[in-house]
Every structure is written in structure tokens, then in C-alpha cells.
Image (cartoon, rainbow, N blue to C red; front, side, top):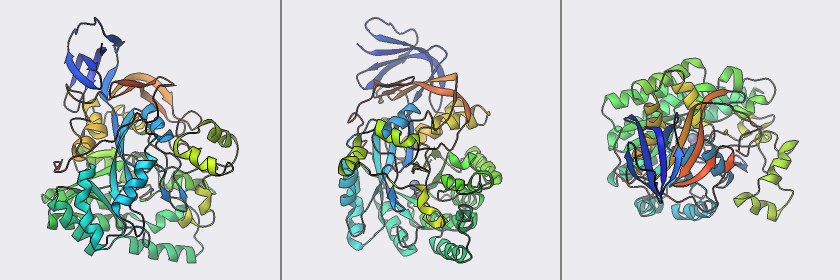
Length: 491
Ligand code: DUC
Ligand code: ZN
Ligand code: ZN
């Protein structure tokens, strides 16, 4: 007996066809018209789109960062992702200081034990000693094709150009991809200390310490090094005109360079959000910072001319006021996974959040929630506005991520023999996004009050229904690690 999705419109990156989809076990086995229903569970998909599950290739679950840990873990974060139509994500493993890459992997495998959706790992390298450089190719044995290097966060993650260049040579030799967080960390450190010395401590000065120029400069440097080494480069969270220009120029020169942006960079603004009165702007502190309208427009253009290839979230959420009000109850109601472990050790424990940066913008933990909102917000901003067709939406949110990161066509499309990660999407259903109803462990939502038309109605992970409207049907441990393969194409 299989599951037969009847009379929906199957949306892939290339086509939209009215068809039935038969799933047996974990796989799609047949797509056709008028498929016989006998012996199958039939799901009536009339008026619905059938799309491959979303793939968010940039998340930080349970990340030690900024003097605390990001809130969502591989339990709650997975559930939230699935309620938003995302069935796979790729999280960043941190190499511990002084440790090996494999030490980092051991920690992240432990974190991932309660998984409820599928996941992969990228490897953040912050301490690129000779032995670590030699270790890079062995990541392929672990199904990891991507290393991420930071050109920012001086004294924490930042690597120098010499190291970046050498790492690119190694990655190029083994068909791996170098991902960069591109901001000039030396200039940022200088600007930051000048601003603080002048008493400029409010959240808005986070922006002044990280202007578009330093993102553009670092992006250009990484693009040029990729051109020199032939290394495939993926620039994460591109936000602004100078960075887009650098990537566009590199691609015009035939360099193997690609990039993504994140949902928030289309919507959240420096003036309205980051510049909100009091400490409110801390909610929107992330790096690179959110930009104003002219940069939002440039991002839309960058998708029109294929300068950028994917849209992720950089999901990395922290409490705004987690210790007070209904959020204490929230913590009690949502025990599970890694979080429960902390509580066992100390029942009064609460992760510090944005308040760490009161009186000093540089101490505000960087990041915001988004893993649950990504699909709905991009459908609203992209498809409902007429900027993206449904197929283009699928391409940017699922197919390109799978192709670039070496797991296509197992993931990222609906076709015979692929994993049956299927979202039954109702393009007419309406929803108002709010922290009071979302599933992320966060006391605010960046898109609070946004009305969206188009929501995931049911979500299937490898053939198993895990979301049905508001009902959660998934189980801890049912998410699987996805091994990825190297030598992916440059899109
Ligand atoms: N930027 C963020 O805002 N959070 C996590 C890491 C990063 O680079
Ligand atoms: Zn980053
Ligand atoms: Zn990130």
C-alpha cells in the first residue's frame, strides 16, 4: 500500500503539471494522470500544489555564540522548520578551538540525535593549522563537501587571506566548496572600537560598524581568490549592492562563484527595524546587518540575472526577553532534546539572549529566527508579488540548494526514485505570522503581523506525514543525516 497524492499540481524547478504522485515507502515511485487508487491511502490535493520540501542550507541550531547559545535545537528547531514546509537543512558544525574538525563533528552528531527532519553538515574552520588543512579532504568520507571560513569576527572565527587562499587550493583539488562569511573583520573591529569610544552603544550602531563597503570589499577578495584557485565559492548571506556587484563581475569573468541571500534581507530595514527606539533594534541585529530598500531592490535584481542562486535564513535565534512573562511557560511546555539536558543540570537555567548587549551593541548576540517563516514569507514576497513563478520559487528554495550542496536528485525535486519529501501547499490559505503562534523557541518574530496567502497544509518527510495543519506527527530520531557528494556544478 502506498500514498497517492491525487489531482494536485506538481511544481518542480522546470514544470508545473496536473498529476497524481504515488509514494511507496520513502520514495516517489510514479507520477502520472488518473493513477488507480485501489490499495492506497488517497490524499485529495485538488487546488493544491505539490512541492519538494524546502531545504534551508544555512542554519545555526544550538550554536555557542556571543556568550550564549542559539535557542532552537535539533528538536524544536526541526519541528518549527517542518511546520513551515522545510524538510531538510544544513547546519554549521564548529571546529572547537585547538581541536580537530572531527572533534566538532562528534559534538554536532550528539546535538542532532533528537532530529525530526533530515539534515546535513557544513564545517566551520576557525583554526586552520597545518594538521587541520590536511584533515579537510577526510570530510568527504563523512558526507561533507563544504567548509566555511569567516573573513569577519576578528579574534574569534576570522582567518587571514593566506589561509583562505590555501584552503581554496585544497578544496579545489577535492571538488569541495568554500563558503565565506564576507565582511572585512579588521575594518569592522576598528569601526566598532571607535564607535564605542564615542559612546555610540545603541543597536543601530551595529550597522555603522558593518557598512556595505566592508561586505563588498571582502566579497570581492573572496571572488578574486576563487578565480585564481579555481575553487568553487559560495558567498553566504549576501545583503548589499557592493557585494552583489563583486559576485556579478566574478561570474561575468567566468569564475566559479555563487551566492545566497536570506529572507530577512528582503524585508527588514536598518531605519525601521534596527533603528527602532530603545533596545528594540536588538531583535534585528545580525551580521551582515539588515539594509535599506535600495539594497532590497538590488537583491531582487540579483535573482533576475542569476547572480544569486538560493535563499536561506541564517536561522540563529536568541531570546529578546526570555526570562519574563509567558515565555517561561513556553520553556516548560516545550521540553525535549538538548534543551532538557540543560534543565536536568539546573532547573533554573535560562539561556541568556539579546539583553547581553544592553549598553553595548557589540555584545548583542548576532542572529534572528526564520527557519519556520522562510517558505511562507518568500511565497508572499516573491510569488504573490509576481516576481517569482512557483517553479522559480521551488528552484531557489529547494532544487538549487540540493544541486549546489551535492544531494540532488535525492532531495530538491519530485520525480520517481527521489525521497518523498513533499509539501502539500495551499496557495489560497491565509495566515498571519506571529510569535504567539509560531513554533520557534523565540519570543519575537521578525515578520510579526505579516499576512501571507499560501501555506503548507501537510508536510511529508520521506513518505511519512509529519505535519497535518496544526498537528505534529513527527518523532524524535526520525530525521536522517544526508551524506553529500562533491564536484557539484556551478549554477
Ligand atoms: N551572523 C549572524 O547574524 N548569526 C550567526 C552567524 C553570523 O554570521
Ligand atoms: Zn555569517
Ligand atoms: Zn550563519
